[in-house]
Image 1 (cartoon, rainbow over the protein chains, first blue to last red):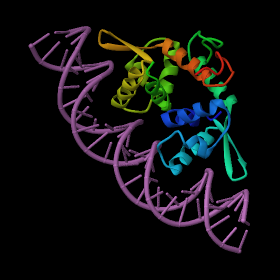
Image 2: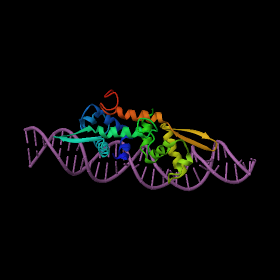
Image 3: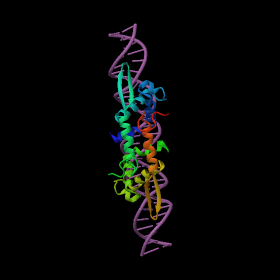
Image 4: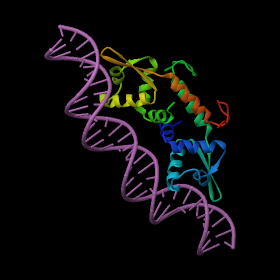
Amino acid sequence: MKQQAVFRALADPTRRAILKRLQGGALSAGEIGEAFDITGASLSHHFAVLKQADLVRTERRGQYIVYSLNTTVMEDFARMMLDLIPAAGGRGGKR
Amino acid sequence: MKQQAVFRALADPTRRAILKRLQGGALSAGEIGEAFDITGASLSHHFAVLKQADLVRTERRGQYIVYSLNTTVMEDFARMMLDLIPAAGGRGGKR
DNA sequence: TAGATAATTAGATAAATATCTAAATATTGC
DNA sequence: GCAATATTTAGATATTTATCTAATTATCTA
C-alpha cells in the first residue's frame, strides 16, 4: 500500500464523498459527478488521485468509465491505523 | 470527532512520525523534535494541527510541555474507516 | 530579579493542491 | 466517416500549507 498516497487522497472531503458514493456499488464518472458542483475536469483530477492511491478501480464499459471501491486497500489502511494505537486493536506496541 | 481535522492532520508524514514517536509514551516537545530536522517553530505548527484534531493531549510540566497520544480519537478514526467499507469490519453498509 | 531554557506566535515565502476553461482522446450509432 | 457523448489532459490561477527567521511568553535557577 502506498501509504502517503492513501493519506493524501483521503485528506480531501470531495474525494471522501466520492468513496461514499461508491459504497453502494460501481458508478460511471458521470454518475458520480451528478452529486457534485464542480466541473468534470476537476472530478477527473480527483479520480486520478484516488486511483494513484489504489482506492478505486476503473474499467471502461463502452463509452463510460466505471469506478468501484478497492476495499482491500481501505481495509489495510484501517488496520494500519489501529496498529498505530498502543495496545488497541492490533498486536499492541510492536515496533 | 472533527473528521476533516483528523484527515488533514494525518495527511502529513512529519505529523504521522510524531504520532509514532508518541506510541512509546508521552514526550516533551523538545524530545519529539530531536528526531526531526526542522525548526522548533515548524514542529510547533505541527503540534497545533495535531491538537486541533484532538489526536494529542498536552500538559505543561514545569518548563516543558508534554505531549501524549489521544488514543480514543485514533480508535474512532480507524473504526470509521472500516465503516466506509461495504460489509467489512463494521456493521456493514449502514448510512 | 536577571539570565537561561523551552515552546509558541507572528509574519514572510516557497511549494503543493484544487479548481477552472479549453483542447484532446475514446467510443457509439447513424 | 461524422456528429454526439463521456472522460481525460494541458495550462493557468487562486488557495492552502509547510517551512523559515525573529520576536514573544512561560518557567526555572542562581
